[in-house]
Image 1: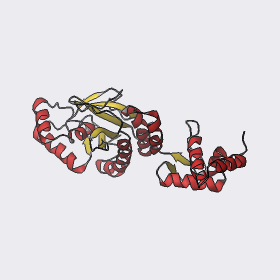
Image 2: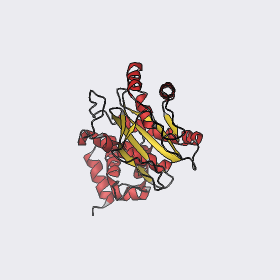
Image 3: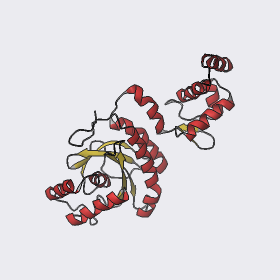
Image 4: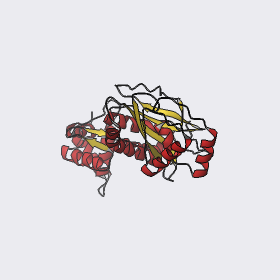
Length: 276
């Protein structure tokens, strides 16, 4: 094993004009792996061959920039680190890009978090991060669900103009799923309009008794809604108000992070995101 001090000294000699700091930061980033998902300052110094003071400065800078999270003892990678590898790895599918963000939201909310895209007149679930305490939703990868009755679907509908929405409501026949289901088309139109104003959608036992969900749009750099990110919970645990207050900011932050990484994805003419 190379001596840490010698390694650091050699690295600084090779990189004049202050670039030694960048090298140290990259060495710390490279030290994270599936087998090392958190590090203290001492861990980072040892793994990167730097002093504790240098490692601490690098870790705090990376935390300030949003690449790491710090809980007072451990530093952990955040989804923004994906952006560092996207230029090298080339275009990837939306589910691949989404998974770290879904996991981050799940770990913070302790609820299952999903991603759905438009597939004809339905929402197609393409990625999901399951919580330990499962909520029975019948949702799994590949599940398709009507747009009008789901939180993700209403978010996807909220991106449509009036003409497209009118054509959609003309051709669908809403079903009664529970006693809370909204099936009148005029009421559904108002619900979608409200989602456009609020920037998020909620459902309260409309799909299944005892189930509440909230969803937000994933917007790419061109302003297009490419997907909807959602979280579901039990009515016994969380009220609608609590869900909005506790879940919304977490979902919005992770949806925004995912949106920034979708520039390389292909949006087809029928508005379905390339899932290859």
